Image (tube, rainbow, N blue to C red; front, side, top):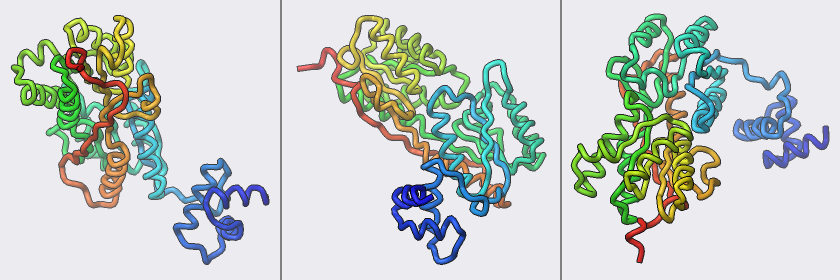
Amino acid sequence: MTTRLADIAAQAGVSEATVSRVLNGKPGVAATTRQSVLAALDVLGYERPVRLRQRSEGLVGLITPELENPIFPALAQVIGQALTRQGYTPVLATQTPGGSTEDELTEMLVDRGVAGIIYVSGLHADTTADMERYERLRAQGVPYVLVDGFSPKVQAPFISPDDRAAMTLAVTHLVSLGHTRIGLALGPKRFVPVQRKIEGFVRAMQDQLSLPPGVIESDLVQHSLYTLEGGQAAATALIDRDCTAIVCASDMMALGAIRAARQRGLEVPKDVSVVGFDDSPLIAFTDPPLTTIRKPVPAMGQAAVRTLLEEIGGTPAPHSEFVFMPELVVRGSTASAPGSRP
């Protein structure tokens, strides 16, 4: 017990006496200090005493399309922590190929009496999907927030990164390095974030390189899957069209693009520059470290929770989209275009 007190005190930056007061529920400890001690307990893997466990305000569902792409667990963690701080219990429901669909997961969560649901990259992002499902959910009195995707047909708050601005950042960076044949590798065209990235990419290529929109879309945009293999396939096609730089719609696709370049006997970034999208956990430690567009995950996750809790509290947010600005993170996967080096 003494060792445990010392560990917790060191982790929280307080005295052992303070830790003892918190664990025994004694008064006279500031709220921030108490929170630091509880956080230290969690970090060190100690179980909280029963009297210190929060009573849940209710369950909140979080539906994600998958967990293989590290950006989804990162977003789930931010949302889960924000919900827990507000006294809610997050319930993570993940779609899997051949497994539960978004509708089935929604039904399961509603049956369990969730206070609300947060959807990440769900059917609301698919322009071919029936949006009536969300109106039916609203009619059942279940508040929800939609992350990454937008539909004018759904009366709900949306949380999105600025996909068009992201492409401007990527293209501006690559043009400044002397690249003129820049390709874009992304997912299927039916998704709203994909359409927005194409719009931003075409506009940036027009503005900076004076290329005709038709040529940009037909020659320099390649659709594939949001996977490492999808990025590899798209990048192979773009390299075959003489692209010296490739902007990818996810970090996973970017890793596939690096693999495609190496299979062609090319070096990244000496022969081909690659830009990712997301700034997923650990992506700074790839070989080479990936230049990427950082998705504002903490801000987006916290905004999703804040908006949902307002809905749950009876103050519904307007039918609007909260758009968050991404940022360019330059690392080792981009360099001067091969022909423009001194």
